[in-house]
Length: 177
Image (cartoon, rainbow, N blue to C red):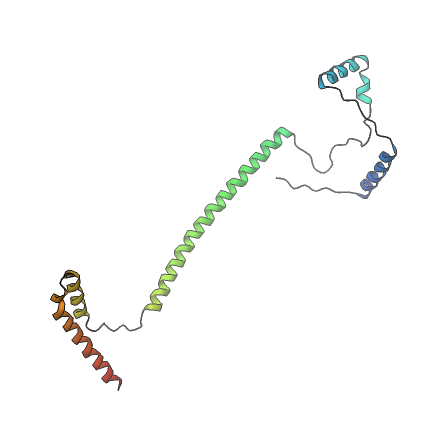
């Protein structure tokens, strides 16, 4: 839509004030209401008798002047213009929305990658020792999965894993002393 500005001069303010005082002093005239069809026929009759009456008769009150600072487009064009402006705004907002969605997608990817890197760095030990007794642990675990109904078959593997863990604990405690 267009931006409009209205400039009010001191002369205009004085004219408005003076006309307001004049209007207050004069009594108000009322016109009788005539239905549209009869008003048209009345106008045609008056024009036939005296066509100059309607052309030269000044209207009471404010003088009619064309707008000085902002032209008003005809109503038929203004509706189309407004529609076109609204469509343009909608298309612009759709373009902006698409750009924002692309930016969001790229930012999500970047944040996800950074989070993954941080998580990997945070939870990674600088020097990872292999887990002691890993082979015995895996064998014991596999046996329990395969023989869930008869876990006594896994007793020798469980005993082997337990002995391995006990030996590692003894080695760690003797190294600390």
